[in-house]
Length: 142
Ligand SMILES: C[S@@+](CC[C@H](N)C(=O)[O-])C[C@H]1O[C@@H](n2cnc3c(N)ncnc32)[C@H](O)[C@@H]1O
Image (cartoon, rainbow, N blue to C red; front, side, top):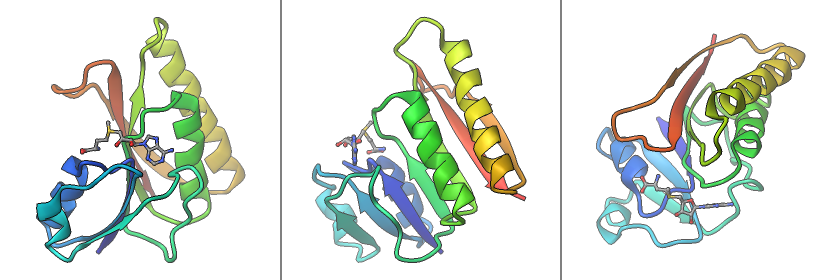
């Protein structure tokens, strides 16, 4: 299997894929952990995660870039709508006060973009134990 990790450094999420023998394209201007690179499973690209386009369809997309939640939501919907991946796991960083409202707006935007693209999907949003001012979203295309 193959994965793209947007905002990958130093490599915590990439490590989860590598442990399962999954090849990862890791996108980040920052350095990846040396041990991870020596596995031969990681291709590190110093690129902007908002501009990067995958060379082939990947099995997984993960994204942990520190950015406005709406910008991340639109990027995730673009990947899924274009068929660049069928599964996406990403964090929505929520430093603002009206967090529930922000998450709802992001989900509505994703819904509208995927509906327009004719893509059916199901999703889960969780506030995980280690999440602080963020929630983790998992979307799978049906
Ligand atoms: C919270 S850290 C990611 C931690 C990573 N998920 C891990 O488990 O080790 C956020 C990362 O996003 C990267 N980042 C922020 N904006 C980016 C962008 N536009 N393109 C690529 N990487 C970006 C930062 O350089 C930083 O390394």
